Image (cartoon, rainbow, N blue to C red; front, side):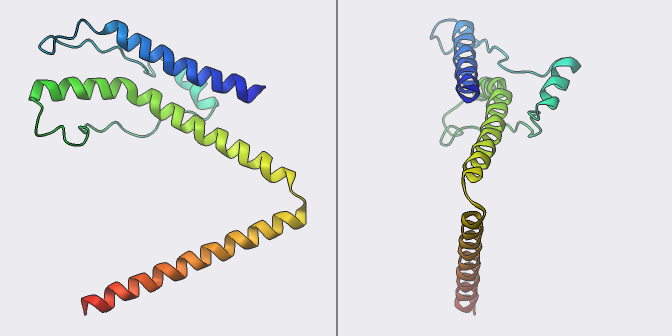
Length: 150
Protein backbone atom coordinates (compact mmCIF):
# COMPACT_ATOMS: atom_id res chain seq x y z
CA UNK A 1 0.00 0.00 0.00
CA UNK A 2 2.84 2.37 0.87
CA UNK A 3 4.54 1.69 -2.47
CA UNK A 4 1.32 2.34 -4.33
CA UNK A 5 0.88 5.64 -2.51
CA UNK A 6 4.48 6.71 -3.22
CA UNK A 7 4.11 5.77 -6.88
CA UNK A 8 0.91 7.81 -7.04
CA UNK A 9 2.69 10.81 -5.51
CA UNK A 10 5.53 10.56 -8.04
CA UNK A 11 3.12 10.34 -10.98
CA UNK A 12 1.02 13.19 -9.59
CA UNK A 13 4.14 15.33 -9.20
CA UNK A 14 5.14 14.74 -12.80
CA UNK A 15 1.62 15.51 -13.98
CA UNK A 16 1.43 18.70 -11.94
CA UNK A 17 4.80 19.90 -13.21
CA UNK A 18 3.68 19.31 -16.79
CA UNK A 19 0.49 21.25 -16.14
CA UNK A 20 2.41 24.14 -14.56
CA UNK A 21 4.72 24.30 -17.52
CA UNK A 22 1.84 24.17 -20.01
CA UNK A 23 0.03 26.97 -18.19
CA UNK A 24 3.05 29.25 -18.45
CA UNK A 25 3.32 28.94 -22.21
CA UNK A 26 1.79 31.81 -24.18
CA UNK A 27 0.75 30.67 -27.64
CA UNK A 28 2.78 28.76 -30.19
CA UNK A 29 4.59 31.79 -31.62
CA UNK A 30 8.28 30.87 -31.52
CA UNK A 31 9.35 34.52 -31.61
CA UNK A 32 7.80 35.33 -28.23
CA UNK A 33 9.70 34.65 -25.03
CA UNK A 34 8.70 31.34 -23.51
CA UNK A 35 7.75 31.71 -19.88
CA UNK A 36 9.19 28.82 -17.97
CA UNK A 37 7.80 27.84 -14.59
CA UNK A 38 10.38 26.80 -12.03
CA UNK A 39 9.22 23.23 -11.55
CA UNK A 40 11.52 22.41 -8.66
CA UNK A 41 13.67 24.60 -6.50
CA UNK A 42 15.13 24.10 -3.06
CA UNK A 43 14.58 27.67 -1.91
CA UNK A 44 14.23 27.43 1.85
CA UNK A 45 16.34 25.77 4.51
CA UNK A 46 13.23 24.06 5.93
CA UNK A 47 12.47 22.48 2.59
CA UNK A 48 16.11 21.53 2.10
CA UNK A 49 16.28 19.94 5.56
CA UNK A 50 13.12 17.90 5.00
CA UNK A 51 14.52 16.61 1.73
CA UNK A 52 17.84 15.81 3.40
CA UNK A 53 16.11 13.88 6.17
CA UNK A 54 14.54 11.64 3.54
CA UNK A 55 17.85 11.23 1.71
CA UNK A 56 16.59 12.97 -1.41
CA UNK A 57 18.89 15.98 -1.87
CA UNK A 58 19.96 16.52 -5.45
CA UNK A 59 23.73 16.92 -5.51
CA UNK A 60 24.27 16.69 -9.25
CA UNK A 61 24.95 20.04 -10.92
CA UNK A 62 22.88 21.21 -13.89
CA UNK A 63 24.90 21.39 -17.08
CA UNK A 64 23.82 23.36 -20.10
CA UNK A 65 23.62 20.86 -22.92
CA UNK A 66 21.42 20.92 -25.98
CA UNK A 67 19.60 17.81 -27.14
CA UNK A 68 21.33 15.91 -29.91
CA UNK A 69 21.21 17.62 -33.35
CA UNK A 70 19.93 20.95 -31.95
CA UNK A 71 23.19 22.89 -31.91
CA UNK A 72 23.37 23.47 -35.66
CA UNK A 73 19.74 24.50 -36.10
CA UNK A 74 19.00 26.79 -33.14
CA UNK A 75 19.73 30.45 -32.61
CA UNK A 76 21.41 31.77 -29.47
CA UNK A 77 18.04 32.98 -28.19
CA UNK A 78 16.45 29.55 -28.75
CA UNK A 79 19.37 27.88 -27.00
CA UNK A 80 18.86 30.06 -23.93
CA UNK A 81 15.15 29.21 -23.87
CA UNK A 82 16.00 25.50 -24.10
CA UNK A 83 18.48 25.81 -21.23
CA UNK A 84 15.85 27.54 -19.08
CA UNK A 85 13.34 24.78 -19.80
CA UNK A 86 15.89 22.08 -19.03
CA UNK A 87 16.90 23.78 -15.79
CA UNK A 88 13.28 24.12 -14.66
CA UNK A 89 12.84 20.34 -14.90
CA UNK A 90 16.32 19.34 -13.75
CA UNK A 91 15.73 19.23 -9.99
CA UNK A 92 12.48 17.32 -10.19
CA UNK A 93 13.89 14.76 -12.61
CA UNK A 94 16.95 14.23 -10.40
CA UNK A 95 14.80 13.98 -7.30
CA UNK A 96 12.58 11.36 -8.93
CA UNK A 97 15.64 9.44 -10.17
CA UNK A 98 16.97 9.32 -6.61
CA UNK A 99 13.58 8.21 -5.35
CA UNK A 100 13.45 5.44 -7.96
CA UNK A 101 16.93 4.32 -6.91
CA UNK A 102 15.85 4.20 -3.27
CA UNK A 103 12.63 2.31 -4.07
CA UNK A 104 14.55 -0.17 -6.20
CA UNK A 105 16.94 -0.84 -3.32
CA UNK A 106 13.99 -1.34 -0.93
CA UNK A 107 12.33 -3.71 -3.39
CA UNK A 108 15.51 -5.73 -3.88
CA UNK A 109 15.99 -6.01 -0.12
CA UNK A 110 12.45 -7.32 0.33
CA UNK A 111 12.94 -9.80 -2.50
CA UNK A 112 16.17 -11.04 -0.95
CA UNK A 113 14.44 -11.41 2.42
CA UNK A 114 12.18 -14.05 0.88
CA UNK A 115 15.16 -16.38 0.33
CA UNK A 116 16.47 -18.92 2.82
CA UNK A 117 20.13 -18.50 3.95
CA UNK A 118 21.30 -21.35 1.67
CA UNK A 119 19.54 -19.74 -1.31
CA UNK A 120 21.15 -16.39 -0.54
CA UNK A 121 24.58 -18.07 -0.52
CA UNK A 122 23.89 -19.65 -3.93
CA UNK A 123 22.77 -16.32 -5.35
CA UNK A 124 25.91 -14.61 -4.01
CA UNK A 125 28.18 -17.31 -5.46
CA UNK A 126 26.44 -16.98 -8.85
CA UNK A 127 26.89 -13.20 -8.74
CA UNK A 128 30.56 -13.63 -7.87
CA UNK A 129 31.09 -16.14 -10.70
CA UNK A 130 29.40 -13.81 -13.20
CA UNK A 131 31.53 -10.90 -12.01
CA UNK A 132 34.72 -12.91 -12.38
CA UNK A 133 33.65 -14.02 -15.86
CA UNK A 134 33.05 -10.38 -16.91
CA UNK A 135 36.43 -9.33 -15.49
CA UNK A 136 38.15 -12.14 -17.34
CA UNK A 137 36.41 -11.22 -20.60
CA UNK A 138 37.37 -7.55 -20.14
CA UNK A 139 41.02 -8.37 -19.55
CA UNK A 140 41.09 -10.63 -22.64
CA UNK A 141 39.48 -7.84 -24.67
CA UNK A 142 42.08 -5.33 -23.45
CA UNK A 143 44.91 -7.75 -24.31
CA UNK A 144 43.51 -8.15 -27.84
CA UNK A 145 43.36 -4.38 -28.34
CA UNK A 146 46.92 -3.97 -27.08
CA UNK A 147 48.16 -6.76 -29.40
CA UNK A 148 46.47 -5.06 -32.37
CA UNK A 149 48.21 -1.76 -31.53
CA UNK A 150 51.63 -3.45 -31.57
